[in-house]
Structures are given as C-alpha cells and as structure tokens.
Length: 254
Ligand code: PEP
Image (tube, rainbow, N blue to C red; front, side):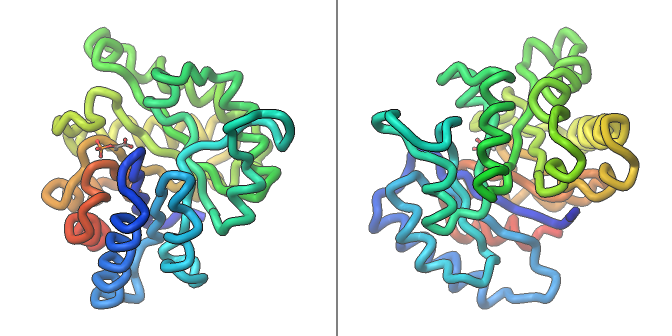
C-alpha cells in the first residue's frame, strides 16, 4: 500500500536508557501532534534495544518497530547472528535491507540480498529495501543504469504478491551522513525512474501502489520540500532520527 512514511534508522547508537528516553519523548511529541493524516512512522533500533523500545511503542502499529539487519538463514549454527523469525517474535514489523553501509562495509551483494529478502518475507517482515549510487557513479552520469541494475538484481525476482508488502528507499550514498542532500529535483527524477522500473517489471497499478522513500541528510529543514515531490512518499532518516524534535518535525512535513 502506498502511504506517507517516515522511518528512523538509529544505526549503532544509543544505550538502553538513552533509547528508552528517546522513545518516550517521541511518543509524547507524536501524541501532541496527533492528526488523522499522520504518516506511518517506524523506528529501527539496534538488536539489544528492540524489545524495550517495542514495549514503549505499544501495539498500535504506528509507530511500528523495525530492525536494521538479520541473517539470511532461517535458523541454525550461526553464532552471533539474529534471524528474521526472532525479530518478528519480538515485535518487529519492518526490516532495513540493502543499506549502503551493509553493502559497502559488510560486502552484502545482490545475491545475498535476494536471499535475505525471501527470508524476511517468509518470516512476515516488511523489507525497506535501499538502493542508491556513489558520487562517482553520479558524476559519470550512470545513476539510472546503476539503480536499474540494483532493482533488477535485488528485487525484481519477487512475485507481484511478494513485492506488494515492500518499501523502497532511494539513498544516494554521497548524501548519507554527509550533510549534502539531493535536491528535490534530483530526488524526484530518481523516484520517478524507480516507479517506472516497477511498472515495467510488474504493472502500472503495482508501481502506483509502491511507497518510495528518500534518504540522505534529510532533516527538519529540507523534508517538506523533498516530500512535496510527486514520487517522494517520505524519508528514511539517519542522524536526525536521534533527536526527537527533529524527527517529529520531519514526520509533520507532509
Ligand atoms: C541513512 O543512513 O539511512 C541515512 C539516511 O542517514 P542520514 O540521514 O544521517 O544521512
């Protein structure tokens, strides 16, 4: 279902008391700003914080709980790893997949991501699947080819039914954590391209129904302009999701 959507990726930040304090502040601010049109909000803490944050979020489904990663196998002898089913059992509804930090630092390639995607869907998790180009790729004018390839290899092996529960995030790598945001025109043209690729791989109705987020130094100042673009349905937020007021300002930017 296409919807306005804001997800916070807390990355490897916050201790348990800090995460609890941030969640309580968020809940208070969101309650004060309750409107019928509130977007779907998701927060994605690190593994050890999931249960405590989930308990504070409650079971309304908005805000929902998400994870940042999991192992591609369903269960077994993988010391130190976490399974999709375990995440689902502690209340996770969403999971981030294909984030550039995992692709670059943990060598997650399209084959692995395709496997993880199937495992997530089997466990009943909704993937937030990230794509995005490096600065080098953009400067070589190869952004569309690159993202087209990431979508084809990582996503389009799914059946139309499987694809239905999925959220896509366009995250230009040169904009992540750099303070350098894509202009709203740059974001819109890539989002429109992604939607067109989904239409070509499935059909126009599936494309019209797909939620596509922008991520990369999105903040309380630039969110409104970005979210006003016709194919931008919200944001995947890193740094600014760690500050309750900034995050809630972003949530209100539709
Ligand atoms: C991210 O890592 O998904 C992200 C968008 O980070 P930031 O908002 O800090 O650029």
